Image 1 (cartoon, one colour):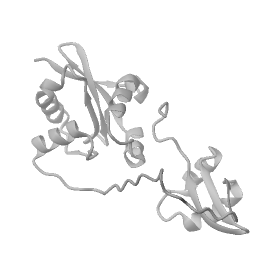
Image 2 (cartoon, one colour):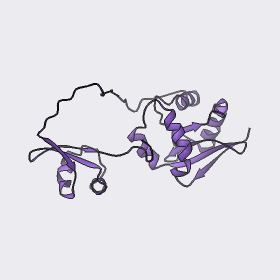
Image 3 (cartoon, helix red, strand yellow):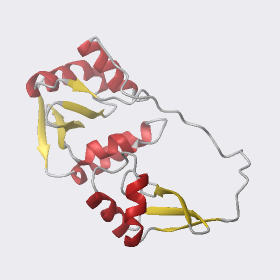
Image 4 (cartoon, one colour):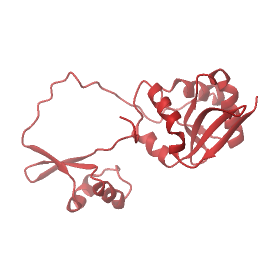
Length: 193
């Protein structure tokens, strides 16, 4: 079997396959992983000159996404092993609900380690009492010093905060003149609802 991988220029080159992959997952993509994806290299997988799937490689050594179409899943181990060996992949960061990548990772590396735990809570049936005196607004540049005091590792730099403010992605929560906190409003995966 002839297995090849080819680097593509941008994540947009994977758009169709990636949407199929993301739609196949039982949970939404996590922002933590999506930020890694945005700083990664993108590859398509070909088997016998036929497009079989894609993978995303973070920092030249860690796979953060791996997808094969239904026709090629039967050869998943051989395809995965070829990629791991040819690119000298050292690790996989895998969502626990990505069953194919989890299975392949454990088969290939024989070890696993939890990097974090995700707690999802379905809130659609809860009754939240809302304090009418708490207001929400989009952050402005004059809010920067207040956000910096509260950022607690959310942002790597003040420049990153300014970028989020400029893009109107930070919400400010206030009660009267007192800042209670802030939130980030951002689509995790572009072009996806």
